[in-house]
Length: 430
Image (tube, rainbow, N blue to C red):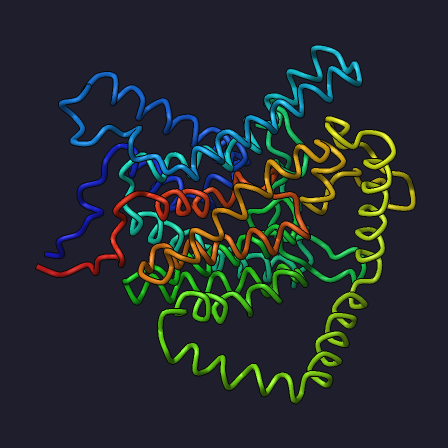
């Protein structure tokens, strides 16, 4: 009989593993936003109770001492986000009700970017638990897509229902349960899977890809990768396609800088690029233009939203921001100003303070992961996660989607854990 780490899960690992394996059943009852938003806080409470009840005799090392300085920086900077929110609300006299609502939104959004790395770093959650859970969640996308394809081909509406769980608050899109959606520009079916909109599924497919690659079991690794590819293709996310194709070469290139062969390859590649630089540049720019022109309406709306956010930030609230997103005019199809881009969104909502509160911990985490990835495969996966976060920050608001990519945030915390092993153990049969 096989001997497996999955036979002896701790309470915290059970919460993580079953939250991932039951991703699609939870989505189909509209509870995914609640799960992602509450899971981190529930894990923190559970672990705090364990520390309180067991005391020093239950832990060989003080859990607080395991927290990386980078995680502390994330915690401080996310509280700076809360401070910017409060100052903006006071400055613009928004009242107690909206301030409380926005503070709860912070706890379900920006706070998670520090909370899950904290949990991954402080709690002994084994990385193979997260990897296997992500493989199962990603693999579940394949039958879900097949069901949607059948429904679409016979003309069954992809919209199922809006979950009554919406009563807890949050954007309506986060509680809509769909088999598939419709691309407004082409009229064709477009899949959002467990995301609130299709580009979010593209983002999640990139995270699933790098986490599934960390799985040692061949069956689950392949099943997870197939599911991630399915998500990426059917989401029809232009950014998702580009990042998905680039992330594995980036992982290999940045994760093997200590290997002389990498420098040899770079020594050959760079002069070659110099010689053929102009045609390569022209090809890249033409490809970029074609991708943008494939959905001109979306490109126009995004560009206009970015200009509006930048202009209003400069003229109205440069330091602390406006405190909330605001409904845009007809020219942007009434899309909220402060969305579709983490950096412009931060400038509009939380000002220059909020922008630096994300830029500083994210950049330092990337630098640390780049160094650690040279000797740790766990950190190499963490580096790929950071690359995806940075890349997608120019297309999405990272905080509002944290409830679906929380496993990636937890992996970052695991990668920051002192003494993390350089590789993931392989399951052995008895």
